[in-house]
Image (cartoon, rainbow, N blue to C red; front, side):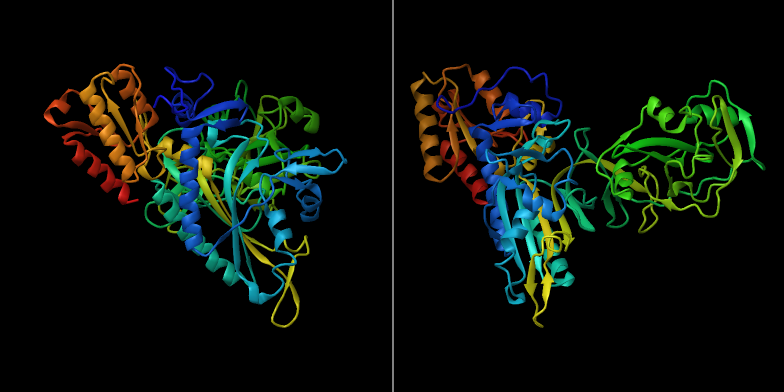
Length: 565
């Protein structure tokens, strides 16, 4: 321990909010270099290499092959795929000394497609699955939660090439099974949920989520306890429970509604349910205004809205922007009179509403008894709520927070067609590869393990990814008897292949014990006064259980546990 490059801190860093971020800094695993960019210190490097190795073993077993692609990528390939302009500001663009445009790779679909083209020339060579471990960079506008959403991170990304959709679906299931084994070996229980494909593309995608009870999870995960349905909030759909959506108004009437500022206020003022109100929410999507009409008790899911418009950037409009684009005041606005002037979308939650209430397009007034024109089209752009009904079996949906650690996509020909990457089929015809994409966040997985496994004293690493399996602590390094037993135990563990640290510092025992718990060593063997009786203390970090054993029995107990990995 006196030689280990680690410095533990007494207090949590002030700029950290996620528990994994707090503990990784305080326990000496990472050091912040810039916003969203961290150095991985020796303890962290050991953890990451173990996550990588588990991933490598399972992917190789599943038939994938490892390669390594460049971190810096030419713009030319991204322009050919059509993503250079579409990806957004997360793509960090730059020019070299020859004025050639480049980017720091956030993902590698273009590179792998370019590599395959000209090598995988015949249907006889397919299918093929290739993967790498590589740095990624995404210029996040708000990096947060430490390693859970940094700008620079380590990722396993894999890509498969096929001649048919059936072959792709078979490999998709093969990778799903491999991912399940990978996360189980890392000590993480995950849930495979339907998700939005985002900037990667493709029509079918799933995320592997570590479910948490804390607010650190990035997304809500909706799932059904009665069937296998589960989905990320940006992809979840539901059946709305039967509620009275026909308001008690028999004709269109303009009503004075002074001092009414919220949907709740309006419902109370008119003595109706919130789902009798059609509210207006304006967004700015790719610099253009979009008016969303949605039932009063529902909220807009922005990713769904963005996808419905094939947009790249989205934000809510300010009050000034609402007035600029419509000449109307927020809170009393509706679609009436705006048709043809700005883009208007109607959420599916509004379908079936009758005699409803909307803004009158003037201050302090609403209109009751409104009904839709028959030509209205509805799209699902609303956020699912807990208790709404499962789209598969119609039972109530539950919700929890989740941290994404992996994802898989069916890309189809999204990249091969525009990049003209072809193979020759059995009839001699050129065909674009049908592709799949499979990612695992290596740094994310390590951080998610801490979110799931920690207590008030520090990290509780799953044994398979702990930086070291065991720490041996002589209570008083100056005591020759304690020192001898500690060194004997330490050397025997080394001989048995156990990864072990000897805390040879001259600090007080309490300091050593606190550091052991904070760093998260799975096992602690303490040589104290009981060595005079031929005994040592054996502590299991995950349970807090403390046993009194002979030194040889303590060694054997660690060896037995490590041998199960």
